[in-house]
Length: 446
Image (cartoon, rainbow, N blue to C red; front, side, top):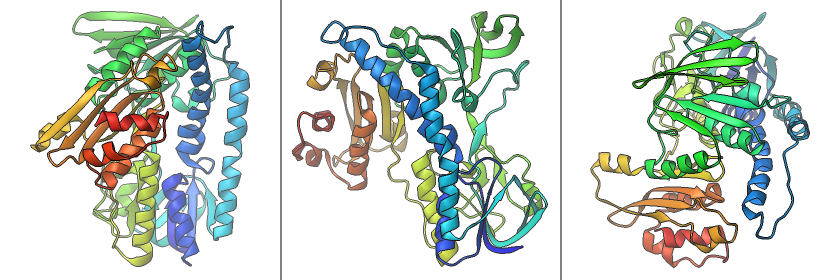
């Protein structure tokens, strides 16, 4: 079978590319080894945020208890999971209807390359002028004794019951978010992380506030410890860890592998198609085209691009790839601003440079930072963790903004717009904001 375009992967990047190409009249096919929709919609952002939404209610109620709120509330995990599953289960059919409407041929199965322009999907041998790899990422495999025993983030989002004690391996988004969720559900939680700090790519001063909030919640956070083995026991699991200070063992009911994710390129026979790749993904040029096979493009977490591994960035890269396939290479992704959020409670959000990165550029810069727990927006909901750090250049343009606090994920979008629009500190201060609102605080943060 011959196509103009074959898209491998039906996440947000692949979906964008397949639909846009088909609507422009290109004969397009898509395939996925899992149900259509991708990680974010089915196994990541969307279902996670539904669960976090329940934890937010618990958090707000607990902080207001005794100052206007009385009585106890708790999470019914089974009901919450049923609600989440009902939402998620409708996604694949909706995605397929979209493909059908756009005229995209759909396949279900893993794709492997037979040559530079041919892939095999089960018994089907498909040839195309352009092939797009948008397979996303998968959890890293733990290379330790018992490394296959922990569940991963996908499994966690399918848990029917929560055990009394969960141990997370890793200190990134997944570990921190799920730990905060589980703790609000009344579960004892332990995090073991090999680094000096969790969330090592975020602004260190803001992460420190999150560490304090995490420990105050009762989560055990073990930093600079390497997990060296996991063993199954009659009552659960034993996690063995080591550091420069010695060794320790932790008895737990469940272990979650949250040690990171890597591009999902396994079994694709990339060598047969002359496609170069590394641990960050398919090596691409500025147009997201393979450096070694011009028939191939890559987008999202499967590409070694300059973008962060975030859904909105994958969508943006998808639009760029589609444009380059349809019109010829002419569009490069714009990574000017890439806001991200860690949906702990409170939320940590970031856009642009950290202070460390600004220092490494050699630019002249200035920093305004502080705690805002005594500001009205924190006081009104009795939130004790609220802090910010904003970095600007000598002309006053925002280089980076970092916030921890209520609705930080919404506030960071305002800073992203300021970076995109090249607003200065003076511009931001002079805007008239709706009040009282969280957004009105950003004028005091710059």
